Image (spheres, each protein chain N blue to C red):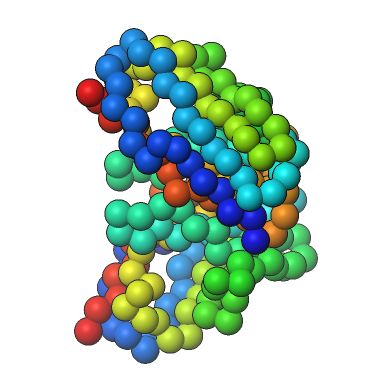
Length: 107
Length: 118
C-alpha cells in the first residue's frame, strides 16, 4: 500500500498570503496525484488531478507541482473561502490512498 | 450529480444498506467509489464498483466487512453491512471517478451519516 504523508498538519496564514502544502508518497507514483479541498460539513471537492491539472471551475490561484514522490499544492494568494482542509490522493495503485490532510487556518 | 440516501441510526449487529444515485451522465460508464470519514478524521478509500458490469475493488482494510454493489437499472450504487459495529459510525461518501479528470473523484455525493450505538 502506498502511504501518503502531508505536511504541515496545520498551516496558519492570513488572507492574501501564499500557502504551500506538501504531500510525499512512500514510493514513486509518477504524476498520479490529486488534491481535494474539504470545508466543514461539506463533501470534498476536486481541485487538481494528475499532479498539475486544475479541475473544472477551480481558480488559477490553485496550482499543483511535483512528480515521483514529492508534490506541492500552492495557493498563490489566500482568499477567505480557501481556509479548509486539503487532502492529497494517489491513483498509481490499489488500494487508492489519501493523505491525512493539511488544515489551512486563519492566523 | 450523485445523491445519497439519508442519515441512519442503527444498533450494533444490525444490517444496513445505503445508496448513491447518479444522474446527468452515463452511470454505467464510470467507476463509483466509497469513502469513509470517521468523526473528526480524514478520508479513507473503501472500494470501487463499475456499474456497467458490477466489477468491484476493495481496500484490504474494508474487504470482508462491507459489500459494494451497483444496480444499473436504478443508476445506483450501494454500500452494505451485514453486521454493524460501533466503529462504523462515520460519514460515507460516494464519488465518481472521472476519466477526463485523471480518474480522480470529480463528483461527490453529499454524504450519508451512519451512527451505530446501543
